[in-house]
Each structure stands twice: as C-alpha cells, then as structure tokens.
Amino acid sequence: MPDNKQDQNPGGEEPEGLIAEKDEALASKNARISELEQALAGKDEQITALTQSAAELEQKLTELEESLAQAISSYRALAVKHSPGVPEEQVTGDSIEEIDASLASAQALINRVRQELEAEIAAARIPAGAPQRTPADLSALSPRDKIQYAIGERR
Image 1 (cartoon, one colour):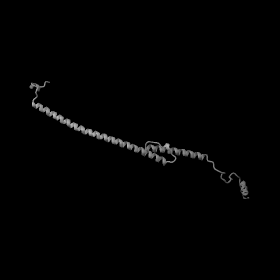
Image 2: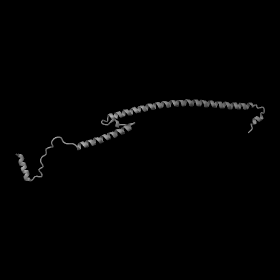
Image 3: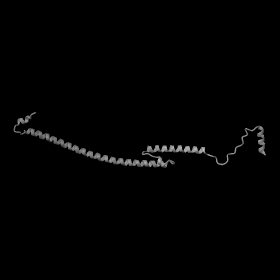
C-alpha cells in the first residue's frame, strides 16, 4: 500500500501536524513506559518482600520442626519412665501416635509373657513340707469296723 502522504509531499518533508501527532504518540508511549516501569518496580519490591517472608517462614518452620522433635523425644522418655518393665528399645516412633502404639504393643507383649510365666509357675508349684493332715476316709468301712476304729482311738 503506497504511502499517500509521501506522494502529497514530494520534497520528503513532513507537515507540522503529522510531526505533532507523532510527538504526541511518542509522549503517550513514553508515559505508558514510565507507568509500566513504576509498576514493575512496585512488583520487584513485592517480590523482594515475598522472598524475605518466605525465608522467614522457612526459618520458623525449621525451628518448629526442631521443637516438635524435642517434644516427641521428651514424650518418649516420659512414656518409658512411667511404664516400668517396658524395655526402652521397644518404644519407638517419630510421632506421639507411633510412640503410643509401640508402647501399647510392648505392654501387651509383657502382659502375655507374664501370664504365660505365671501359668507355668502355677503348674510346676510343689507345696513345701509335709502334706496337710486330713481325717481318714471311713466311708468304705463297715459299721463294725467303724465302731472298732472309734473304740481304738479312744484308748
């Protein structure tokens, strides 16, 4: 498409109105560029603030994880201390729920072993000393033998 304005102005000079329009368009574009640069600077500040905030949150998260690990370790130590007879190596876990579950299974194991040992001891129990004295069983004796037995004891 041929440029009609150049055809009208054969000397190559642009009319003043066209120059003014181009200056206005250029000024408008420059103003828009300035606005965008200011907006970009504002976004850069926001990005910097968000990056700083993320770093602070990561540090806080690390501190909370360390604190949680210490709390869980303390809980495990208290659980072992207040559960006599439970071997310390039987109580494991990285959370309170896992520690509770391992403590319950260790208690169940100890109770089962205790019951089996008590049953074994009761089955193997031998009374100490002589057997108890019991009266003689007279039910198999005849009446005559019973009378003789009674008379014999009185003497």
